[in-house]
Amino acid sequence: MLGVIGAMEEEVQLLLNHVSDQKQAVHAEITVTTGTYKGTEIALAQSGIGKVNATICTQMLIDLYKPKKLIFSGVAGGLLPNMRAGDMIVASHVVQYDMDLTAFGRRHGETPGRDRLIECNPDLVAKATQAFDLAFEDMADGPNLMLGTIASGDRFVQDKDMLRWLQREFAALATEMEGAAFGHTCSLNDLPFVVIRALSDSSGSSASGDFEDNLHRACHNSFKLMDQMIPEAMAGHKRGERRSEDRRG
Ligand code: ADE
Image (cartoon, rainbow, N blue to C red; front, side, top):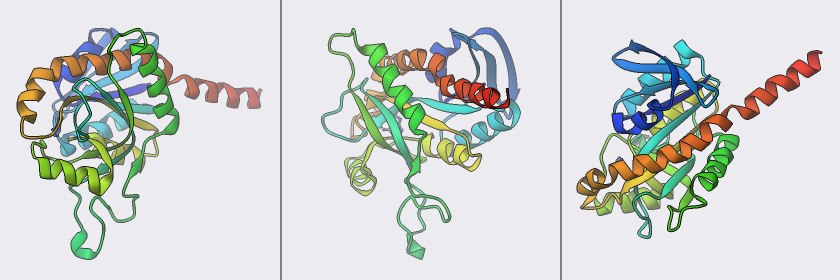
């Protein structure tokens, strides 16, 4: 079973349209759809916005549906000047930028006992980049792909100083409101995960208007990548299972 989460309805709807043999259940007001996506068993949930919602949703999905791997997909605000709406970020790392224990000498984003930058699963990162190539290779003037850190916090960033700080403090490429909470939860449960985002805005003074204008296009790009990735996401896992069965046999 693959766990897939998006925050908003727009971020899960396109995937939902392609899930066959659908069954739905509601837990803590979160609707989870199980079924098959191009042959892969999937549990797809809409978490709601923000780190608390993302955490509750991720732990619930892990406890009740036992996914072996998890992906969070949706939109984000870009932090570099040359980025365009629709460009895509695959997170190599995620960080909770608003975790602040600097009063005790810790660095911004640091949770005691955990790495400041939470690493996404390298195999899932590689699969996401391959899926990007397949999804967009035939497209003239298609989106760009960047790999790097995504900074998450409970704030819609619409402020040049804040976006500069996120870029300089964490070398972050994009900001959103769920990825690091999701990553933290997956990592506590020792499960492989990755965060995939398409840019809806540039996190500056026009961000909320740009977000509304570009949401549909960004969700479409995110969906195109996920549509290629989901059938491949569990491949290593199945091979791994076969290898251990081979050893037993
Ligand atoms: N998601 C999309 N754009 C965002 C922004 N600018 N800040 C936080 N989350 C976002």
